[in-house]
Image (cartoon, rainbow, N blue to C red; front, side, top):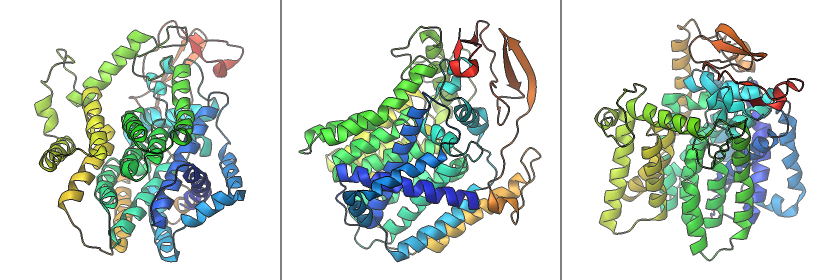
Length: 515
């Protein structure tokens, strides 16, 4: 817990300063310091993550945590210092934020149980920390081609502390939600966030995203912040959409909506367009290096060189991802892309029902009001993309939050409530409940609340090695099941192609993999 708090202070301050510099380029017209604070920290954090992903192209990321202090030099610029002063919460909100951070740190220091963390999140973090984004990495484990700036930033901070970033984001969301709830005169923009945040918090608590490095949580927040900023500041909305894209490509629908609104507005385009292009470029470059496909797993513009997975493999992976989401991990042999036989069983799942209900409610509200505002366009466009590509709620809850936020802001009027003690109690209860449950599972490491866990997070599982496969001088570790967790790299649950080899055995893993 103490380690998380210390890293949060360093990383959060660096992100705040970076975001304050970005707000000088694209100001946010809000009189509330908490709004500017949230926008600055999130934009700064996402931007630093994108820079870290770019660094993985040329070097390993282990030991780069001190580099996160470099943006603090921006505070020497007078205009940035003024931006920091404008976005500084007052004493009362700061005390509230401190209490939420303490409760969240205790929660986030618990055992990491999110399935995808053991499947590929942590193994990819482990790989990026040790070797960087090497050519042909997706040939070893195709999910290593799912590049994310969020995972790269986790690798740079501490490969063994995977809950650093999501825990911080979770605390910021709770803080801003409570401040919005206590605001006496809320605008429609405030209400969009107020009613959208609970969807993100609910998904995070159910899936334990705040106790994992999953990029689904920051991607959803980036989508909701973009929708919030579309009318407030189109240049800043484009910047928010751009920083969310390298986190997870499923947030891509936010970019064309923000860009279209920016072109239609009277704002200057270049101050937002240039940094947006620079921030989105690392994901395309890293994907091209690790899989040969800039938009992997999409087969669009895939290369066919020896370090690429190839167009045919990319198309197979794309279809398997779609079918997995449709058929809920039970893929029948007769499954076809244009078939709807999966829909009856899919739609009765509670979160899927919420997803569809949010779409229907937003459409009905727009029809009755005879207008479709920009946030709804964003929510519907993104929902359509998710529904076609991979209708899984974990990919869709950012767009769902936008649609729920808009619809609820039209029909609901909540009176101000002082719910800070309740929110903190909920976080602590969530921590205690999961601690009690997971202590019964033999594969979860035991922790002592009064000892080690108060200092550092619960260690990850080691993973169980099944066998070592040797081919072409390459030793691949095969786990029991499909989760590598902390097994040494290269580790993959999938059978490697017989032609897989090191591109240059003399240089080792850093030279990458070829076929």
